[in-house]
Length: 299
Image (tube, rainbow, N blue to C red):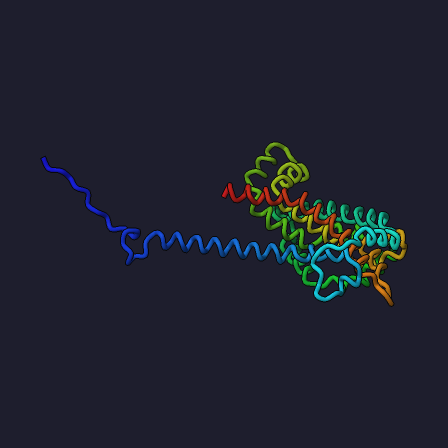
């Protein structure tokens, strides 16, 4: 009875001339290490401006301009916040900014998604020329519309009112283009046909089918619009002539003095304007991140 002896296999791991699996494992570890280091450096570079803002908001002007720069927290944060509250009507301007930013975000999400849904999934006369004209408006600098917008607001009697900030920002071409591209790829035509068979009209189909499938894009657009409206400075500075109607950004510019500026107080005011934006991003980011992850799993 003959016995079978296994034939030794020549593998890359057993043959040093071929490099071996250890070589590829080492290269993979080095690649992951480099990737992690790049991510860490990127995170530190992104976080440092916020950290430096907090440091300056806790320091005096002399400490801010000291050399070498001070990278540790100071002891003047409470005093700087007190000076901000005494210098500007912080609560009223903060309330005005919340009203304007929230209204703009809600209106943009509604009107842009409605227009995007129509452009993506319905045919109507002049659809293509209208969409091209819409995209062309994105090429026009916003500063060119300041004078015509002011004349229009003056004709309507809205100068000095918050609706002069809300109504012009109720829709934008960027949001329509973004959601239109998203709706074209994420909303199946068969689902719309099924809704029509069930007797659903345009608005019912939009609300029951379109909006749930566009939730991730709507979350991004809402956050983007809220931050843009919150940080807007030029248009509120032009249109808001009533000090009681000022937004936070225009109110904080009153902290700058012609002869002497307390930069610790200015940085404390800037910190107050940044903190709500971080909270809004943390709350809203979950929706479009979860939507992206769900799309990746389905793919």
